[in-house]
Amino acid sequence: MSDEAHSLTYRRPSVLDGGRLGLETAGGTALAGPAGNPRFFTGFLTDAAPVAGGLQAVARVARSRYPELTGRPVFRDPVVTCNGDRLRFESFSRCCGVYARLDVLSDGLDGEVHDRGTTNVDINEPLRRMLARVGGRDPLHLSVGPDDLTATTLDGSVVEKKVPLPQRWLRGFAEVQVITAGFEPRAELSAVEAARLLRSLPSRSSGALWAVPAGRSLRLTGSPTPGAVCVTSPDRLESLVPLLRFARALRVYGPPVRAGSHPVASAWELDLPGMRLVLALSPGLNRGFSGEGAVLDALASDDAETDAELIGALLSFEPRVEVDLLAERSGLPQPRVRDALTQLGTAGRVGYDLAEAAYFHRELPYDATAAAAMNPRLRNARALVEAGAVHLDGDTATVIVGDHAHRVRADGCTCRWWAEFGGTRGKCKHALAVDVMRNGARG
Image (cartoon, rainbow, N blue to C red; front, top):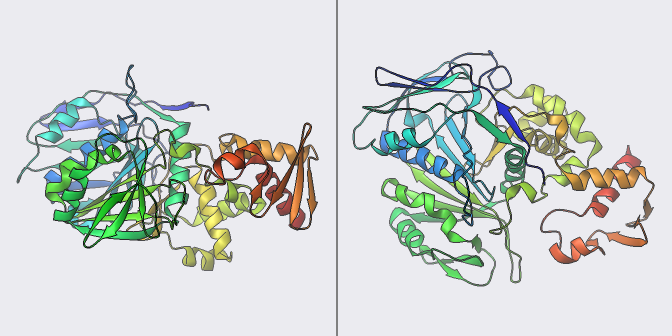
């Protein structure tokens, strides 16, 4: 799998001037909001200590890899979006198996929103040390724009850094918003119960554990039951623990499961003063979100790309992207709007907020036309259609690959991929080829 990076260049070095920390970011129209190069936000954080802790958590995820391997670390820099009434900081672990997002809401901001937009900032060791010293009533001032993020505390320093954004991050952003959109709230724990649960999690476990409701808390078992939440390698939740002293509640989300279910993804959200920190865990220690294949159904639709152009033109960095409102404004049915949002997700243009059960708008410097190139199964499926390998027969189909004839039905395919994964990692190339063929036939 390619991990090609999209490199962004800083316009000038980062500086420390009179106690004001200026972090240079890779600005420009590809990252900026509607006005091109405005300031997005300037002001104070009303609860500086938990924000500083949340930023450290997002940075900690960005520099982590599960399992941790030796070798030179490769740091990735969090993506920052101003959605008008909130600031969002997002990152992935180096293995793409953990997604982190800190949402600082309007109650956590005491300042002025000048415009909306997205950038990515450098949070390296000097800044992490500075944030670690923020506590109590210490002030923390942020000024966010497409050219820099300026953080002001009682002291601090900075190291300039260029930013590579790998394709795996883009694929991860796309997959996470599709996967988590299918989650439902499974449990809400008080701060006391949250601390008891997180501190009791085994420090090392590569197998899948399941958290099931038990009174006011959750207990861990080795087998899934209806209502359970999967937590593979629970040490991946370690970034939540330092923030437990600020927590008001812990909300847990997951997809529907039943007895015998395969491991699935989950999301764990700390409710903090004026903000939320969420960690989403992939289904397995060796399964990054970038390879889950959840976006493939939507991308196989012939209408998705055209619809995405229309829906994308209607977005304006809303903190909540309402599907029903977009359907009304665009004249498209809601399923096509959702497919269009998935298509936009492959360009990093939308994410999903579990707490509000709504999409949100951001912009990343990626080429939306690269979606197929980043999904080899979809590319191979279209090649099968072009080669005339797909033969429809009512509700079933046959896909000829070399000397093998694969039978595709509504419940799966006879290929080795489907036998191994059972559809838990998206459709195989044969099933996708049938979808592409049927979509073309309907068109």
